[in-house]
Length: 285
Length: 278
Image (cartoon, rainbow over all chains, first blue to last red; front, top):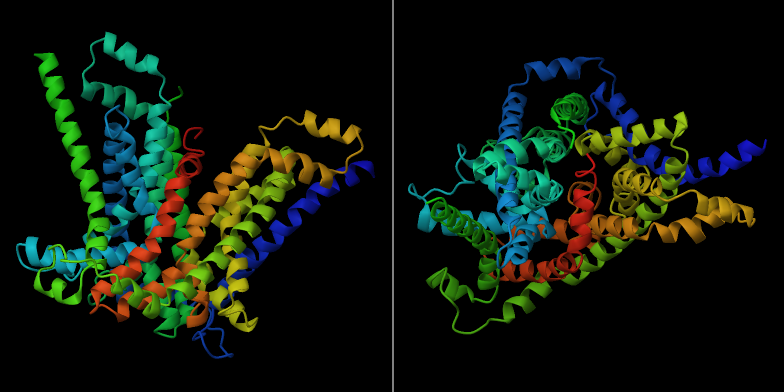
């Protein structure tokens, strides 16, 4: 009796959180699974159960193939460029020089702005400045179906690379100075120090940055929506946009939900296996 | 020889870092330049300086971009959602952190981690349906609950980590004095959680202020739009009057950039939490 009373308070402390969890995650998730088996259009009160039809339709759908390809190109491209640049900039910013803190702040500040604002600034720069003064063909990056994804990657980088720079800098400062000193005594060059000391010891930072960047860019919605809305001619339509359009434009909420569930399963598998892979490669300090 | 090449490398590195810094500043430069130019001057020469500062762009933007109203909505939404997350997550984080050896609490922690991995798109359609049937669409309190809840799992994780570093002896002493658990939490533990509470408050404020997905779904009427949603529509509509649009952009940048610079220490702390420990 006494233990129940003693522990009861801890359970009571969980209650508000459990209510929010059920309201925002569990209940929508369960109804979502239900919707995926219906032909609901997103508006009317009535709908019919159609079994697995939505899931089979995914395989026949050619527009979703394009959306999947766009999502993968965007996410892999974004993750690779982001991490290479962030790590490089972190190494440079981690050295002492005049204006070091100013430079750091400049790389972080775009994180303060919404994806909408970042997209507005860069679509202007792209269409009015780049296309007029710099582009060899006179075309803008975002207006050209073959380069539009690169354009969105650039907007995303400017807007969000700061967080990875922060994490890599934290990882770099966390490497004990003895390691550098030992390497200096052994006469290791800058590149060798980077390759054999910094890279292996940054394990936890890699795990976090690469997993987070990839899983968040696979589901990126705001930047694409604000920069192009999926255009021109669906050339930047990602799975996230595709699901949104099924609810608000194509009136196929049931089908969109089936896609959303497959999308979630794939994201979880990718996220967990990436984390496992990187964790297994980490070196103990 | 070695010294010389080293010096060269350092120089190249400095050039790279400053060039990138300038590139990152360029959009801010363009924003301010466009915001203070007249339409005529912009048409004549896009990148030239204006002959005088055209403040009327800002006045124009204040009127047409509905800035005051959307700023009010953004402030209410952000404060509401952040307070909700902090209260709920600190209590849950304390309970889980103190009962970490118990399976039920660990299971709930795992559920919260799984919730963080669910993409918003998977919950979007059912949430829309649920809010429609509850008449909560276009309601700021409704959006506060949803955004507060979406920010909750990550906040709980940070609270759990922090609670586990607080020695339990403090609570045991207070128990002997006859304090109730609830009193212990609000009088003793919650004040001790201040550093992590500030970090979470700062990060969640930033995220909620810029939130797009939930707001686009739930806040569609003009009167309830937050700044990002208002701007999403506004920039689309006023693509011809760039000067006014940039004035609106600059006005909306000022408060959040000041907030970011003032709170930068906490943002870095929050973003890197977990990265070092792994």
